[in-house]
Image 1 (spheres, rainbow, N blue to C red):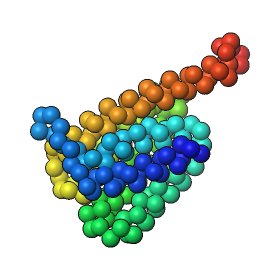
Image 2 (image 1 turned 180 degrees about the vertical axis):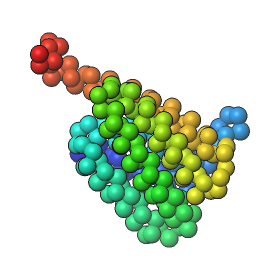
Image 3 (image 1 turned 90 degrees about the horizontal axis):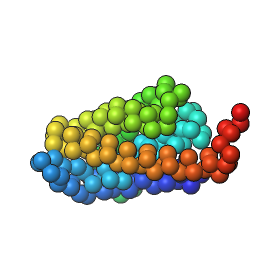
Length: 178
């Protein structure tokens, strides 16, 4: 349950940060600051998918979208409203595509599922979000995609190591139930 709460809080933090700051990157690229909060969300959601299943994760997607929309309305900040609206559309498309791809790859390793599903979903998310919130700025779209993929990989490595550590504690002999 802690992961679900973290999932929702990261989304709210990402929206606020994206509406406040643009961070320059090398090679003339840039990203909305929210990307640093939001990137682990894709991988965290993959972990939630394994724990709760596709239907419940889809419910978490819609719950998170509702929380973000409520924050935007209550704040009265028009840029935050635009960022949140763009985020909602991008989020619903990319999160559901990521969940579908992750589900289709259910027989593959955790890291393969994470990287394959994130490769598609972060591209969709970056293109839709940046275009709706700020306009079709390729330096932001490419910058956000690259940063999100790096952070997704790092989060995946961490979660995979954590999962393996838990599995070893549950089955110290490595018998795997055979």
